[in-house]
Image (tube, rainbow, N blue to C red; front, side, top):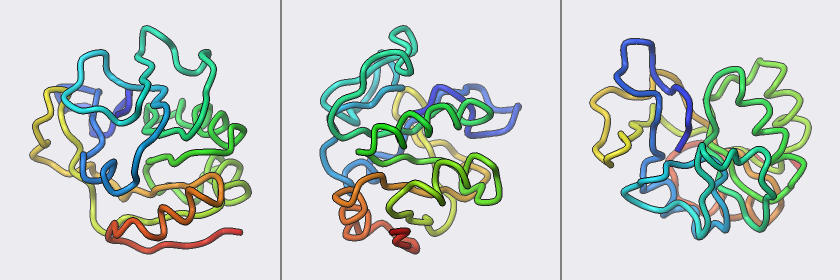
Length: 161
């Protein structure tokens, strides 16, 4: 889930859930630092909500990160890169400073997802429109890279280390 926008300004919400099949394919996470208080499914054993401010709370174990999209994505990726154990889902903006600084130069692997994802509304229903941009999963840590490689998520896996 991201507490930020995945869609254009005409959308009725800026809170979007990760499709459950993505989470199921990646296994159990210890922490999701940016999730909804009321949610139709879990993405990790522990969740921080917007009230908790997951950027300021301690991170532990294996992290699932679907951060707020936009200018704040970089600060979330920086924290995950420094933590070194987790998987992030962001738009595949491969040319950006953020991507070079916190993905190309730091991550262990990436998986470009085939097609565009359909995120879900906070009540769990699937959005009628796709995300509007291509998505990428980013693995930090060799164990997460191997999980990403063996996930059977349709796309192109690339080892960066």
